[in-house]
Amino acid sequence: MRKKVIAGNWKMNLTFAEAQRLAASIKEDAGSYKHDVMLCPPFPYLTGLSQELQGSTIALGAQNCADRENGAFTGEVSAAMLASISIPYVIIGHSERRMYYHESHEVLKDKVGIALSNGLKPIFCCGETKEIRLAENAELHVDKQLDDSLFHLSDDDIQRVIIAYEPVWAIGTGLTATAQQAQDMHKFIRARLSGRYGAPIAERIIILYGGSVKPDNAAELFSQPDVDGGLIGGASLKAEDFKAIIKSI
Ligand code: PGA
Image (cartoon, rainbow, N blue to C red):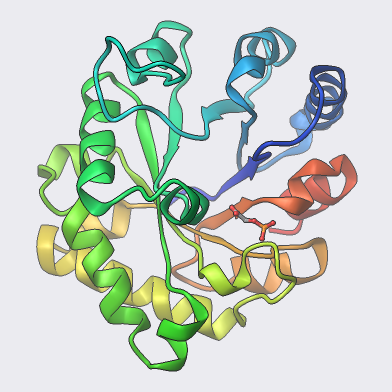
C-alpha cells in the first residue's frame, strides 16, 4: 500500500513570523495526522522552521534547486546546500518555474539528477495548460514531460521521486480537476511508469494531485485509487484549511 502525502507549497508568501505561526499551528495537531505531511516554505525559512518542527513528523521540502552543483551562479541555491541542512525533499518543475523562469525539460532533467545525487527526493511536477487539454493533448503533453525529464532514471532512482500532477488551468484559479479527471490522468501516469519500469515499481510511486485543492473537494479527490494525496498551494497558507485537508483523507 502506498502512503498518502499532503504537501503545502507556500510559494513566495508570508513573513518569517507568519511562517512560524503557521508551522506551529500545523505541528500542534501532528499527533492526530494519519498521513505524511510536508511543508515547502521559501528558502530563507527552511532552517528556522526545521527547528520549529523538531520532534514532529512533519517534513520540510524546498520549492526549487539549481541545475548546477555549485559555483558562480549568483542567487541560486544548490541541492547540496539543501542536503547540508537536512532538507529531504525538493519541488522540481512546478508550472510557475516552467512558465515564468522558462525552465526547459533539459534543465529539469539536470535538476532531478542533481537532487537525487545529493540524497534529496524530488517532487516532480507535470501538467497541461487549458489550451492543451481543450485540444485533447493532455496525456501526450504529460507523457513528454515524464519522458524528457524523468524516464532516464534507474529503477532505484525513480522510486525516490514523488510525481505531482498539476493541471496548469487548475492552479490558483479556483478551477479544480474533477475527481474523475484527476484519477484518469493519475492512472495514465501510473500506466506509463509501469510500461517503463514494470508494475511493481509503478505501484510504489506516489502521485499527488495539485490545483485548487480545498477542504471541500479534498476528500473526493484523495479517495481516487491512483491519487496518493495532494500538493496544496493557496489552502496551505491557512492553518485551518490545511489541517482540514490533511484530516479529510
Ligand atoms: P493551488 O496551487 O492549490 O493554489 O492551486 C497548487 C500548486 O501550485 O502547487
